[in-house]
Image (tube, rainbow, N blue to C red; front, side, top):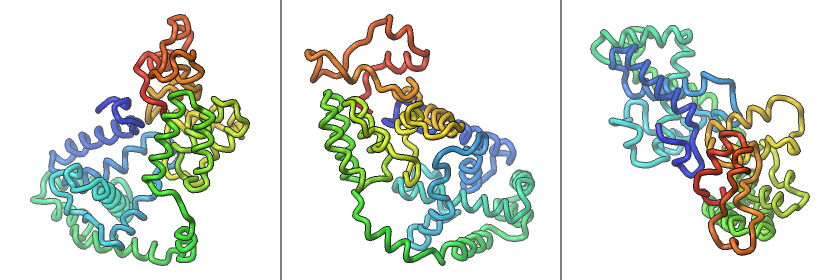
Length: 332
């Protein structure tokens, strides 16, 4: 396990820990003979089952990713993972491989009566000559046959997708990944150097072309807050249509003045943000903007942040204080 502070925007460290513990359990349960497709498929399945569902879990669904990869000729295959998914040639291939083995194992467990079938399969793996013989002993079919049955099921589910919806989505002129990265970075830099009005004016118009990017929405809303504009909540938007869970967006959305209902949805957002990037100041400090960013004394503009008094730090929560005592990690 690496620190969630190591990647620039954190990672789901709690789920990763559950994932790795599952690998250990599978190795123990199968006398260390569980094949890679079973190891990764079950570890991905179990990594979120220890907790209640969270915002944007399983988005997009593994079944949909697996079907699209097969349709587009990008499928990796259940038994073609090599020595490790990490050694596949690209991040896209790894993402497809995870989706395929997750979908396959979920389908196999469902078709064979639930989790008891998995326990039987692990015991068979410990004593039979290979994984094909083990899965055949438990379920009556070998791996290739089960893969064919699984793919047939995916085709039946997804081949009748609404074509009109696809045409409508293609007609929208969305900002591409490179444009999104450019505006996000420029917004970060402008905020870092206290040009918050300019950051808002730059990023806000682009939200119509990238409404699904939570990180871009966070940058625009934060700039609006710092500039004391009255449209921060509108720029932050809601969870509908977002493509991924960004911890900064989740933390800002959970601020009391942005809450639209009194249910526990926002507490879950706070918990999810901590589960991705606990040392990001806006996450660690309950949605409050990093005080090292702005406002700053005029002589510090152009420098990378400024120090905070010990008296100020002592009044904060332990997690918030730990986040602010670390070097400023850019503006986002």
